[in-house]
Image 1 (spheres, helix red, strand yellow):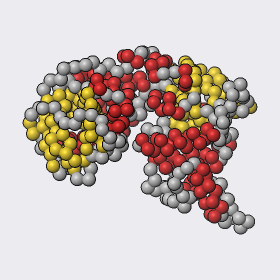
Image 2 (image 1 turned 45 degrees about the vertical axis):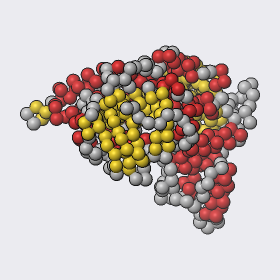
Image 3 (image 1 turned 90 degrees about the vertical axis):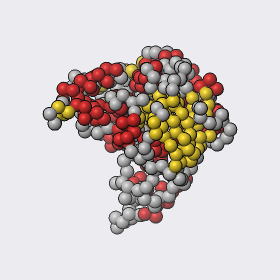
Image 4 (image 1 turned 135 degrees about the vertical axis):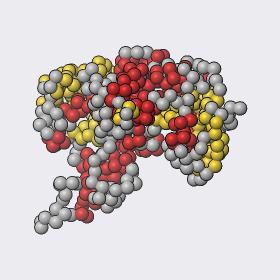
Amino acid sequence: MQEPTTAVPRLQLTHASKSFGRVRALSDGELVLRSGEVHALLGENGAGKSTLVKILAGVHRADTGELRIDGQLREFASPAQARDAGIAVIYQEPTLFFDLSIAENIYMGRQPVDRLGRIRYDTMHREVDALLVSLGVDLHADRLVRGLSIADQQVIEIAKALSLNANVLIMDEPTAALSLPEVERLFAIVRKLRERDVAILFITHRLDEVFTLTQHVTIMRDGAKVFDAPTADLDTAAIVAKMVGRDLETFYPKADVVPGDVRLAVRGLTRIGVFKDVSFDVRAGEIVALAGLVGAGRSEVARAIFGIDPLDAGEIRIAGKRLAPGRPAAAVQAGLALVPEDRRQQGLALELSIARNASMTVLGRLVRFGLISARSETELANRWGKRLQLKADDPAAPVGTLSGGNQQKVVLGKWLATHPQVLIIDEPTRGIDVGAKAEVYGALAELVREGMAVLMISSELPEVLGMADRILVMHEGRISAEIARADASEERIMSAALGQSGGHLGHAA
């Protein structure tokens, strides 16, 4: 299984640099991967991780530095050369041919043929089925890819890498779009790969995954390696401090509060087949978290409160006034804002400018003589950008050019421009780096200090524990527990999420 540290590394990159014009993306990239080891690569967006990976994958050629595979000096001029050297990359969103079978995707361009040049489907299917069985997944070679989950598509990419005899596997944010059971299945597959002596580079923003899965950690900042150590020698506080230069105590800046008046009251919300009899309050100055497993109904409740999805029963009140269901425009007018889970698909128009996206919810206020005032639009974007520490040089640049964390800040600023009384924010830090997370947490803490009521939906338990004043846990469409901040723990939340006894039920009077 894992080789002793004295053995020749499977892959070793030293002093790699890469510039694009005047931009120095990588200044001193270093990495050592060993057989049978899962190695975490951590760093904020812009730290140089993607550039380093693209050098390993043959997409970019380094300006300086050395790459050795099993001790042999190598240089890749194309992804095909990296693949032939045994390096495979599994991206967050696999790129497969949906109308072809799993076997055809795995053997694309290299199908086994008989003497007449006909594809030997029986051989191809037999070999792919054996690969899938070895990975412990219930998939079959003749199954079309269309309709498969992201998790299953990733399994196909892993099987393809194994069919190419890859012995270095790079996994770039592979769990970002997966449910908890899918993550657990992926981790089981990764452990099987370790047993085959595959060296695995695992890139993630989720620190709990680092401690669950990896044996070694490399941290990058500003295009260079700044830290390298066995995972067993680290804790969360040490990793955060190395990544962002701040202590964990300041990472979650939420202070204890005395809540004010009820700003959001929901009673008996029901949508048949999705959620039932959901009741709770959110008061001024507090953050209430909706926790639970994927599919428990959390996002669906938020969408129904905002009026996107229909309700079969129930009542919603904003600051004591009843809200007409099924009307998002009325929700906004009443003082409600919703930052959706999928910011790229639901929260932003990626091809439009940062300024236009930031002002989209209040364009009516910016019209002068029938035209949108570009000056007012830019001023609004700059005002909220400064408050949310948006890292963007030009408000006229397309919002799609920003990092994930900065895109999230634009979505948040867009809704804060409406001056809401209640902010619903779904997965506030999904897919963004640790530094951007700290800035989003700081913004939320400031909002509740100013008296806003926040309903936060999150799958990250450290985030829930660090930021919420109260935690409502959902299980199969119902609230199974209400847990006070002082009484909360990961074990208690997970117990309630699985339908076991978790805490007091009910809502504030």
